Image 1 (cartoon, rainbow, N blue to C red):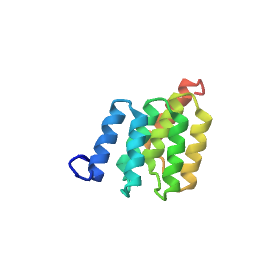
Image 2 (cartoon, rainbow, N blue to C red):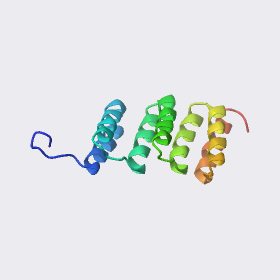
Image 3 (tube, rainbow, N blue to C red):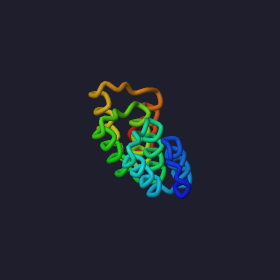
Length: 131
């Protein structure tokens, strides 16, 4: 596209990011995300959620939390789905205290947990022996 002088659109970037995340090429997806923002495109919730999910699926829990903070720093308020993605990842990795702290943070920000949020936490507690 670039060789032909065609400027990629937000949809092009989103598609590339999604494909790279599906192939577990998270570093490349983050690079495309960075290029997208450098070119002046504002990522939407789908792009942010795709990166979060990719980071979590690849076991990059710390990086996913930092990415959540990046969203907030860019005045993009994460929703219950974004928080739920990270909560699930934290619980799956046995980081129950961190998950509960994130749940508290959600509530303080006025983001109401849903059935999926609570299911992840219950599953995490069960797995850690805290029935």
